Image (cartoon, rainbow, N blue to C red):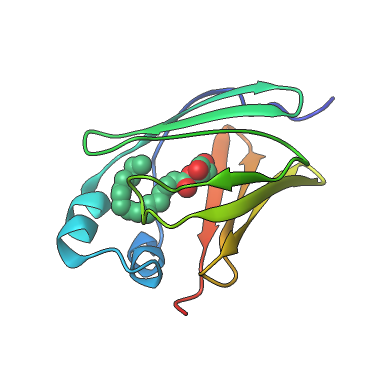
Length: 125
Ligand code: VLP
C-alpha cells in the first residue's frame, strides 16, 4: 500500500532547529520567537499531489507541489530566498532538493509509527 502523509501533525520535538535557522541567516530576534513555536502541519495528499500547510501563532507557510515536477519556491516569511524545488520519492521518503543560493538545501519527510518526521538541511554558505 502506498504511503499517505495526509493528516494534521503537531510538533513534539525539535532537534537543532537553531542550527538550521543560523545557516539560513535568520536574525536573532526571529530565531528566539521561532524556537518557541509549536507549529502544526496540515498535509493533504492525493497520489503525487501535495498540500503542506505549516501554521503557527507567528507565521505560516503553504507549499503545494506535485512529485517529479520542478517548481519555483519563494520561501516567503521564512528566509525569503527563491529557489527551484523538486520533490521525489526515495522509497517511502519524500525528498525535496531546493536549488538556489544555499548549497545542500532541502528537506526529507517520512512516517515512522504514528509520527511524521522532517529533516531540514542547509549549508551555511
Ligand atoms: C525560518 C526557517 C519561522 C524561520 C523563521 C520563521 C512556518 C516541509 C516544509 C514545507 C518547512 C518548514 C519551515 C520551517 C523553516 C523555518 C516560522 C515557522 C512556521 O516545511 O514540510 O515547506 O520548510
